[in-house]
Length: 173
Image (spheres, rainbow, N blue to C red):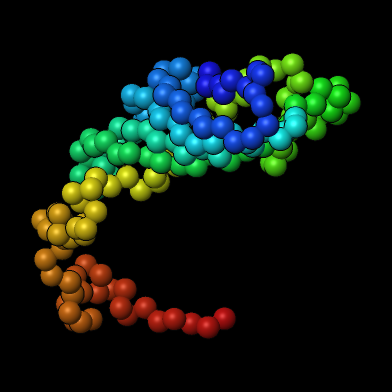
């Protein structure tokens, strides 16, 4: 669980700096290894807390082009607003959170950013995983032996087994 301590915090802007082991975050994608670095700010105004964080982690990936394993640094921002208001929690239990604001209890001592961190790091994983040494190379350059040497140059170069199909006529119905 990743939390930011807020008990007794005065209004204003406060620096946030956290280091968290990947194993401490339940259900995080297995590609992530080592520690996650979280840097940014927490702004408090009354009972509203706004976080603006930058997260960086290392992912252990398998290259889609070569099949080689490589590590890549993944970075993502996290921006969220928390509102400490127990009355909202009691009155609208089904609408506690929205995309804009996460409602917490007045007596909470910390902000739990575990779910935000899990979601943002999950989305930040690249869909196409290509090792840096293969990014500028095309498939044909990497595996020339898999590319057909010659393509048929004309209709006359068609394999004899398919010649019967040339005699078929297209009829319009």
